[in-house]
Length: 255
Image (cartoon, rainbow, N blue to C red; front, top):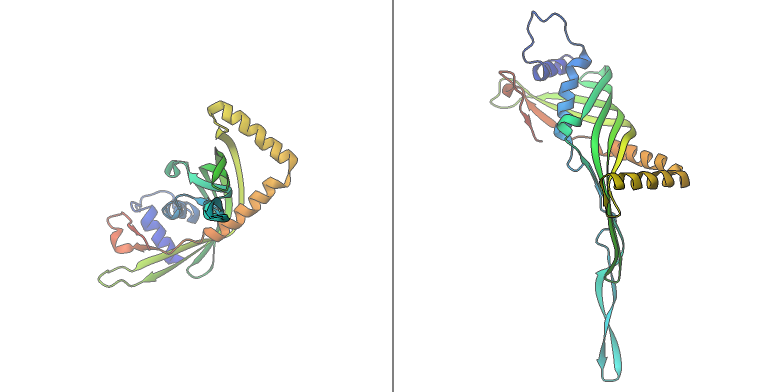
């Protein structure tokens, strides 16, 4: 684990001096480094599902007469129940919290750890109902929440020699092997043409009613979210050119 710790020290503590009274623990050293990596790799939006948005089908649009023989004219029109969900981070640079613990190195150049992350998010759910080209309904619900997830992670590092550089390039990859999602501070910003406090009150009533009618709904959503986190949180490789860290600044290059 020594190469990884050297990299973390260079990135997170470039001004460490011999007179510093207390040496940081592995977790304290790696926490700012990993938080920065995760912020760099955080997608925008965090998640998006367009479902069957834009669905169309062929329908009758008119009749053309050939003397006494009618011909039904057909065309493609919007049709069906469209839904779209978008999840965005709210001020991630300030709202993203990260706690690291249980740091282990089972094999060389591989580090496993448990991390708890918190982030303020905004969820937008939009739906429209179309019938043969006629829009019967359109509505949007927006809500904010504080989302926390505890994940088990694996980070691998390797070092590559770069032509023209004295120091090698570190290649870092973090992936999630297990996830446990929770949320709080759920507030509705907009629902049924209402904004602000009225939307918050109505949204709270709707949510409570849904959970009462279908108590398994929340558990089902969490299970799907956990699976999506594990599937989507395998970051691409991030390259760190150690030659560019001096005199104490790191340059993270996109893959």
